[in-house]
Length: 371
Image (cartoon, rainbow, N blue to C red; front, top):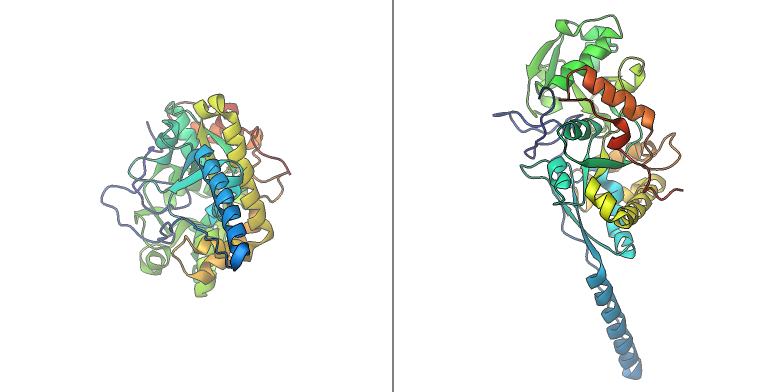
């Protein structure tokens, strides 16, 4: 097939979850977080005489009930798209607060290996995963039976960024400039649509394959602009006091599609065989994201236990992203058919998938808990 290839080798994600090219350099457009250890709690009771005995009896009883409940829990695996970051905050909040346990779920969070999350979830080796509309669409075109059950962020938060001193503020300004990317079809297709919207041609852009090189390093000397998620690289620029110009995709929706990135996916078999598990998982997850929306600082502190990154960067990234989890949607996770229709059609029209994908089959809102 042309366009997207469904695999990933563990390199950090650029604005779309593109695979690292053979021989490419790993870099840090995104932080090199590592998954933290599981959260554990201890209950310590002190007392004297009969009170000690009474508390001991109660403690044994409670422990026995808790052990029985744990044994009865559904063991669930969630595979991330990369390492823990502010896209995942609601999940870690729900884990920290015990909300998955309350739903009868024993959740294990894992990071992707050489096999992409789409194949792993599609094969039922993980019940849930974090993916992106472009990856899901390409996977379904290859008959991988995955479905988006929630949009983590309601609108696209990516754009083409450059250092402010270059004065690149509109798509037409990109003519004659050097783009640092990964040599993938979707990058050219998106730039082509964006620049045509401003009467310019993508053929006038020099494409430079920089792999996963650090945005701040390559834009100093090798390239003029690159595609970033603002929630991390843009906020990092603010922290570093590096002024940027960003040409936002969302400002040109008459020419480029909005799309859900990232999304939570599961497989068709789990939906058919155990819909209540999907419902319970999303109930806890939605609760975590609602907490992150209402309490960004506290949510960032919870995520920081799992994300190896500068605490100020995590805090400010969370502050920027929290209001964008829902925006104008009726509830967290909600997905519109019109958004999927336009995006899957755009993918097909640009030859980014091997066959046309039904937008109705790509997602469902059925299992969202509602407000």
